[in-house]
Image (cartoon, rainbow, N blue to C red):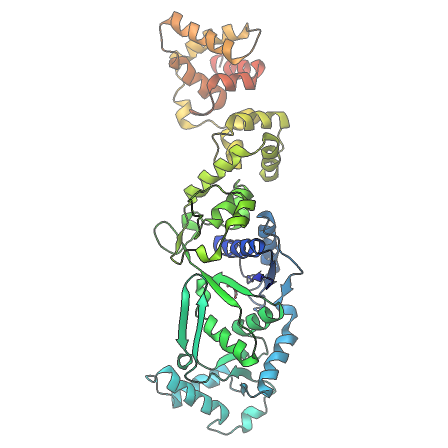
Length: 468
Ligand code: GLU
């Protein structure tokens, strides 16, 4: 049986974003489902735009998502010699030729000799003859040590492949110019390096974004020139924002590491990304990694664009938070928090807010009153506190001061008893009390909060307001 080998091949010219991460994820799921290998290749031949910091962040993003790669990472920048060898071998076989023109020079020639309105295939032939027999002779150009190497693209070749997602795709070679393999500076073009690497890495399936679909016929021509077997292809649909426009920051699309910082769980993002273009037959949405690996099929990926919905990610994240052990959440919150908090307090906060938070950061933001005396007061909360409510709270303060068993049942009874005696609704005390002890208008049950904060803290916070 054929051993499946796939790769994720990012160019380190930016962070790992949703699109790239989804491509990596589908490759990973496909490899693991088929008990094959998932490889990582860094396409860093563009020395100007490639940055080491992006390599670091791509690796960090993948590791955080637990999309583990097999074997050593392949860096294209370390293989320039190799691409040269393969390009020269095509020259020897007469499948390619040297183009000695510099780009500026070439522009001049084109302007002079090639009528603009000609179709590509006609242009191609004139271009080729101008290159192989320069109008001013070869004398000046021959002195140049290097020239670009271009592949002859013959006419009337029907290039066809069956994409695992989009089905059969066909194109006639007449519409493809002679392909530049090696530039004048001897660096490989994207199409050439990809083919050489995919061949040497024994890649069996190429799964990538459909922005590459127009490159595939060119790559097939390069495979053919070498007489190499052609891998299978699957081009993934684009990801759009809910307004059907190109996905951007505006839609809440961030780099993988930024999601981590905002308190998204790795499992939740993994699950969410997997559903950007694919869904299981029964349309379930919460699916573990193991199950995903078991049921994922690349053929089931949708060919129409996927829609990125940040609210769905937040919902999914809240579902994942609910299923985690408190201790585990504690560790994750600690990882993203710049302040050090008392673990016991953090655990209380987690316990009470676990079913209400969308992100790990929410624990720190909406549960700050469990963690510090410096908690934030929302404007709406402050509005709940007035002279009258402070009068009621003064009475409550005196009663709470005497409580011996500080638990939610007792605290509730005392409060309700007081409101009855005063002939007011319990909410007239509950709302301002919640506002004072938490600085918020919503949250867990008030009496649970009071019990968790403890007598000393509640009395102190109340005192600050009523005796000022
Ligand atoms: N380096 C290419 C990119 O980042 C991917 C090439 C490929 O997957 O063939 O878009």
